[in-house]
Image (cartoon, rainbow, N blue to C red; front, side, top):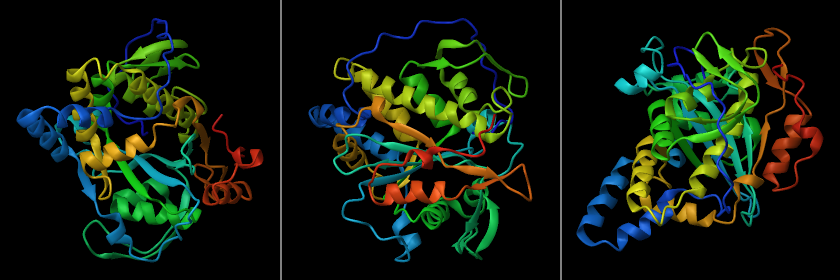
Length: 359
């Protein structure tokens, strides 16, 4: 995620990680919460309606029409997960740096592939500075936006919104995106705080003078504000580019999923509600997931996926020959990676290697 104006994280002492608990599959609180709510009568219906109303939906299918990659019968499920740096709302403005940047951008992007049978998952991060060919879309103002070559990936969201991001990803990968999930600054922070923080093993000392984030290497328990700074830092790790922080983002994703699945949700209905309330307020999804029932059904269908088995990969990229501050998809690696995901096949080791490493 971007690095402008992040409130500083201040914890520098090492803390022991929590003892690992038995994994119960990749699921969020919504599946358990749905059962609790439906068993509770009129008050439960009010709570259910409250949570259901939190979720914002985008009709991706209607916006994209029929000109899309074919949905193969054995291709599993593919989600596009975006972290957006929207400045909408007072809390997002504060976390985003006082509103100095107008509009919103896709700050983090991952294509999450869940193979047929759903026993494992793969998350492919697309660097925000990747130059891509944007297809013709409808702009945020409703006017046609002509196709354009060599635009920064994160600019697509700012200019044309989530449907165009999905269309761009489908064009560059040939992968049919089944679902879209977006989380913003404030929502991310509140979700981490609702689950009581997340423990990460910081790989090296971080002293990001641009953001004020200072952490010592080793296990650290981070609250919401610190977690946001951690996944957005770029000057404090690697060569200061967008590529250096992708590893932190992927590491944090797995830690967050593990934290949620280890929570004793059945033993704490109030805690379950806080997590679900934070999660649903944070989310914008495609219309197919934009209800509590749909999210719960999808979460239950993923019970066999263990966060510990999720593989995280950065899209193989090379530094652009014209502008070394930008990257482009590296071939043949990127083509091999997307083909394996389309065909629900094992990803070749050579398809995981990126010429541009970010230091």
